[in-house]
Amino acid sequence: MPATNRRITFARSPRGLPTPADFGADEAPIPVPGPGQFLSRTVYLSLDPYYRNVMKNSPIYAERLAPGDVMIGETVAQVLESHHPGFAVGDHVAVRNGWQQFALSTGEGVRRLDPAVAPLSTALGVLGMPGLTGWAGMVHLGEPLPGQTVVVSACTGPVGSTAGQVARKMGARVVGVAGSVEKCDYAVRELGYAACVNYKDGDLAAKLKDACPRGIDVYFDNAGGETLATVLRQLALGARVVLCGMIEAYSMDEPPPGPPLGSVVGARASLKGLVVYDHLHRFAEMNRVVSGWIREGSFRYREDVTEGLACAPEAFCRLMRGGNFGKALVKVAPESL
Ligand SMILES: NC(=O)c1ccc[n+]([C@@H]2O[C@H](COP(=O)([O-])OP(=O)(O)OC[C@H]3O[C@@H](n4cnc5c(N)ncnc54)[C@H](OP(=O)(O)O)[C@@H]3O)[C@@H](O)[C@H]2O)c1
Image (cartoon, rainbow, N blue to C red):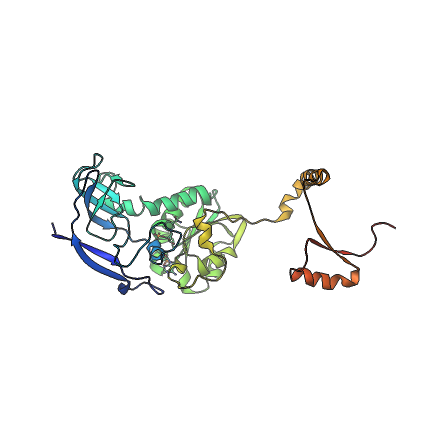
């Protein structure tokens, strides 16, 4: 038993990709549990991409880091001393000890682990938060149907490999995207994907097209950036896109160009495509309801009418400059003679 608690601390927000200089280290006394607390020793520390976002104090996360704070993180630990009725000495737990050898816990949010059920380390990966992410995102948001084509990026990581294999179990044809030949071989041989594209090998678009000739029905996005942009151009009709993570942006000092998709994730929002022609069968219903509202005075509309066909070009240009106020129309001739 060491005499002190070795800790890795947060030193500063990284510029670009993190470097060891962004972290510090210190030693502190091993804490003593008070009433309702237990002391545990860290066995496994989970390393998760989102720590990079916490290191820039992204508002998406509740956790905040100031210089000198112990780095946050989930761990598997073993209880050493307990004044908590729910946890006994020797118990293994999944607990947020952070990057340190020892920590106290009140038991809140702690999961007890049974090493007989699964290796302890899996509580941080496939049977932990990443596994749940892949499972829930595929089953409840991706919802692939048998035979549909599902693409998963970062497809060999804990989130991606769970999402991909769950989709396979649901009867989908899974195509992975990964960053090396070794990862792609593993994805096909071990994870049972139909194909895997190495995006670092160039021409992702053409390779995806080969692997997904009928388009992509579900995309489970762990990467963002170029991979997302490329996949979006190959979606099949009615496709679902699950925005899970955008690791490519985490180490950028400026937000990437384009709409802030991280906000979509944070808000648990869905983006759906609309084409009015799919809803033509609702035309009569819309007309009946809205014209009724107009007649009873509970619904307003406004028109911006330009007189004379000759003025149409200018009126159109004004519309495209945003200069119209209401439905832009050109009055070409009297309503009746
Ligand atoms: N929404 C949620 O609630 C939630 C929960 C957990 C995790 N996540 C997100 O899910 C994603 C996967 O997490 P994970 O824990 O399973 O991680 P992971 O896949 O083990 O690790 C990250 C992987 O991302 C890939 N990657 C793609 N573009 C990258 C880039 N520009 N820089 C670095 N790596 C890049 C790399 O794999 P390749 O070489 O194969 O590209 C890398 O190995 C992350 O974006 C994470 O933030 C979201």
